Length: 428
Image 1 (cartoon, rainbow, N blue to C red):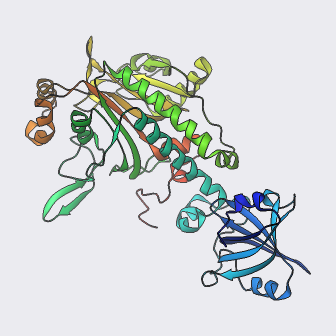
Image 2 (cartoon, rainbow, N blue to C red):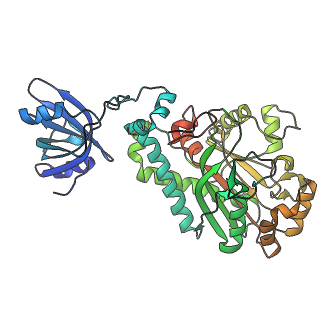
Image 3 (cartoon, rainbow, N blue to C red):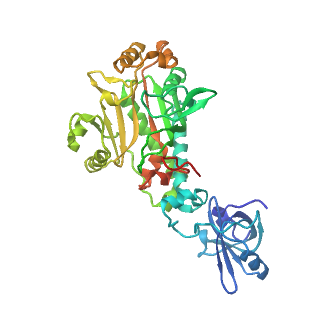
C-alpha cells in the first residue's frame, strides 16, 4: 500500500492507509493506547485497542521509526480530524534510545546551548522544523525571482588564494603546501562573472574568522549573493533587492504558511519603495559624531524604530557610507567622493544587507588601490576582467540566518542556524 503523509489523512477517511514516521508520543490508558506519529508533514493519531499491539507499543519508545497500517476514521478531536484505527505496527529499525529532549511537548523548553548540543534531535521538534521551513521557502523565493529576471545561478570557489578584502580576518588552510583561505565572500568572482552572464546569483557558505561572540554573528553562514550589470547607480541595486525580498516573503506565504502559524511569526510588508536616508543624516538622527565611520548596533535599533514610526516600514536603507569604511571596489558618489554609492539595509533595526555600485573601470581600480597602499598584482586575475570590458554593475548580499532570525524575532541568530559555527562551537 502506498505511503500516506499525515497531512493527507483527511482525504482518506474510511480507507485503508499506511503511514510512516517517528513515534512522537504514547499515552497508555486502561484499555486503549494512543500513539501520535510524526512525519515531515505533521502529526497523526493512532488508536490501539488490540492487547497484543498495545504490548508491542509499550516496548517502542518515543522517536522509534515505524510503519503503521490501519483504517482512517474521522474524529474531530484527532490531529487533522482523522485518526487511524485497527492498526498493525511494524518497526523500521531498532527501538530508539530514550531521547534527552521531550520532543512531544508543545514547546521544546530547553536552553539554547542544550538545543545546540542536541541539534540532531532538537531540530525534530515541530517548532524548530518550522524555523528552517521559513529559510527553505525564502531560498525558493530568492531563486525563483532571480531566475525569472534573467539571472544565472553560479558556484564560485570556497578555497581561495587571497582574501576578498585586504586586512580581513580569514581562515587559513594548507593547500598542498601552499597557503589558502576559506572565502569570506564570493564578491570578486561574482563581479568577474557579471562580465560573462550580466546577471548572476549564488547561494553558498561564507566564512568569517572574526572573533565576534555576539547574538548576531557567526563564523560560517549562508550568503545569498546577487550581482548584475548595466545599472545607473546603487538605487538600481536597491530596487532589485526590494523585489527580491518581496518574492521571498511571497514564497514563505505560499510554501510555509503552516510554519508561520506554528511560530506565530509576523511577516513584514515590503514597501513599494524602501525608505532611504543618507549616512550623514542618519548620524545626526542618532546623535553620533559626524566623524563616525559606521553605525553601532544601538544606532541601527534607533533607526529601525524611527523608520517604523515615520514610514510604517520594517525596512530602512542607509546610503552613502564613508569611503574609508567601504571596500576598495565600492563606487564613490560622483559629486563627493568622501561618500559612496553603497547602502546597508536595516530590517527591524538590524543590518541585514550590504550592497551598492562597484567600480568597473580599470583605471579607477588602480587609483583606489593606490590610495589604500595595496599592490594591484595581488588582484591580477580580478583586474584582468576589468581591463577587458566590464559594464557598470553592482549587487548585494543577504545573510540567510540573520534574515530568518529577524523574521521570527529571535534573540540569537543561532536559533535560525542548523549547526552553528562560532568562537566556541565546532560540533555537532
